[in-house]
Image (cartoon, rainbow, N blue to C red; front, top):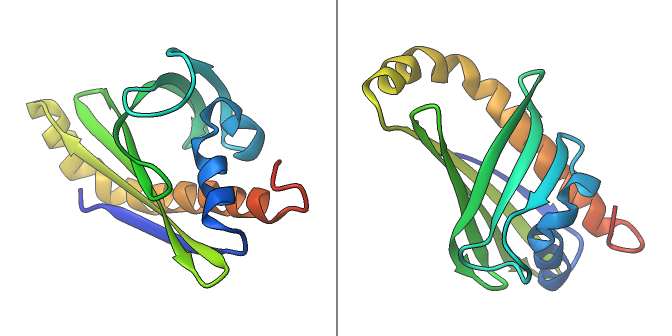
Length: 153
């Protein structure tokens, strides 16, 4: 699957946005699609941090164990999971834009097994619109949280 990228301009500093996207244990308070976060490693968040995330995907609860695979403080991090024969990756990136921040979310899925490759060829084109909508919802929720008077949910 070709990566999906969604970007929004956030009227908040990089540090405010970075703090929001790395406050993983409180993401469910910011992002309506996330129902629960259970931290599996101790804080602070960084390379190797793991958590269990339950969110609504395509109208159903989906729970995945996520891990941070790449970590570049105040710039970007990549988290992912392996599930149902696929490797999923999500990168959140902060780029200064004047007094604000360009927040980008990039998502990719790579089928690893034969069955996942067959299903991916059939299902991914059908799911692309829903995935784009989910990414947009997450990133808009983060934007709203960062732009609120207290910079929180």
